[in-house]
Length: 375
Ligand code: KG4
Ligand code: ZN
Image (cartoon, rainbow, N blue to C red; front, side, top):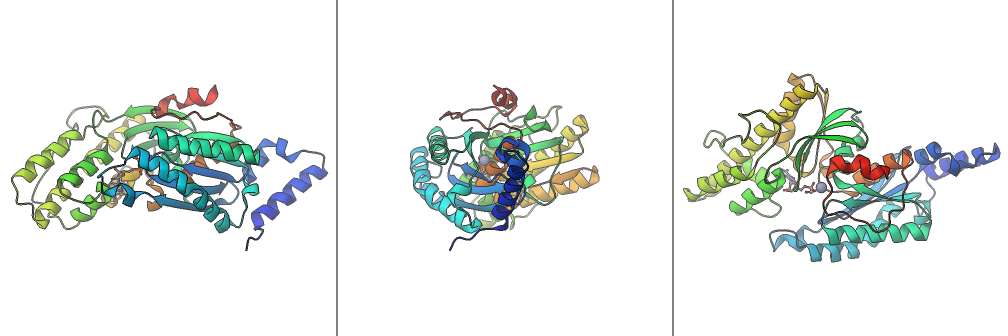
């Protein structure tokens, strides 16, 4: 049975109070943003994520449907299948979170959806759903940048990073070092010149015959590896700069594998050496960027930030450099609706409610975001 939660009671009291003293509470943007319940919708790739977030109460509910089993037999995401499955999942997932939070659709004050970058068909499902529901509920709708949502995800935790900070964004499609001066003010300091780090994990895992998605499978396999057996090179670390390159590491893994019988131990040793080289490279570049920018906070986000060895190594480096490091919880490292709802709530608080129609952007550089949200 649905029941009224304290948040709704609280909101009503607040609104009645303001109405009594002659204010229209909905015109007081700051108050509205504070108590506003934002529905977040993530459909940029192969995860359907939804969540309800409110500044006052934090995360109210979230749910995720992973399409892993749908794509597993193809060894990668099939865009058309992904789009169709998002359509199937959205309504049941939204029912699940409204039930979890004890709310109904009419309690939703705003909707945030992932506008890009991502698979265009998958993005369009989220965009059309969000805009349709927004129209039906007469609430504002806002399109969110997927990478901005990732790098804000640590703000869903109890200890939140404050601006400014350095962000390391490591996902299936991106490997970036970003100077984050404030919400929406992003300066790209380093990027990959070829494969993204998650992509390198996935491709190397495939070479080792590990299951899809490769990142977590390779990390698990590496646990049994002998660290001393192989040493892989750390790409682009012996020259200045903050860019990355990971495709050479995958080739190095391929050449190493070709000389082996590829027993379970061989696989674990190669996985271990690959992971070690990636972790060392990312840590070294983060340290270099921290020195360069003199920032004292580091935020690590995106799917690869779930990697335990990376987290441990970055924590060690941060401690030695007297820098605070922030990660999302494991479940919010990979794609999820909570980070989209949070990004929406923050942007709404800045009075950025927009009705943008059905625009989605398959490609969308993060540092172009400031202009995009101001037009
Ligand atoms: O952020 P995400 O869910 O999707 C994109 O926006 O790309 O990241 C997915 C990527 C995949 O490449 C996956 O293999 C990688 O994150 N990943 C990991 C781990 N968990 C996920 N890579 C290394 N270690 C992990 N534990
Ligand atoms: Zn992502």
